[in-house]
Image 1 (cartoon, rainbow, N blue to C red):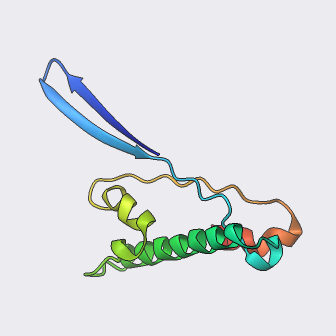
Image 2 (image 1 turned 90 degrees about the horizontal axis):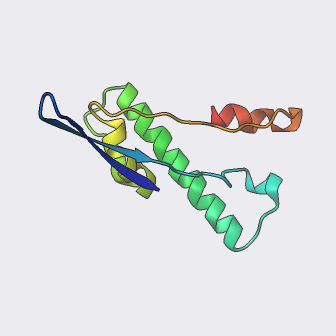
Length: 109
């Protein structure tokens, strides 16, 4: 979901534009634990691939690499303006408090 925002400062006659992307990555989990099959398994694999691509982008940005792999997934391509230049990014992660989910929670963080 993308929300485009426009604001105008009447005193300065200045227009400011912004964009908010809300991305639901629910279903990003380990296939062996969830037991999902068929269409849901394919969706889970796709989400996990997008998250791996996002990790690659974060790593390249942190290393100030000359090439940032934004085009490796639809997610990173969509978020390119947010992750570049003056963009701001907030990521909310819902993790499980159970002991059985510790490894998955650590991977999410």
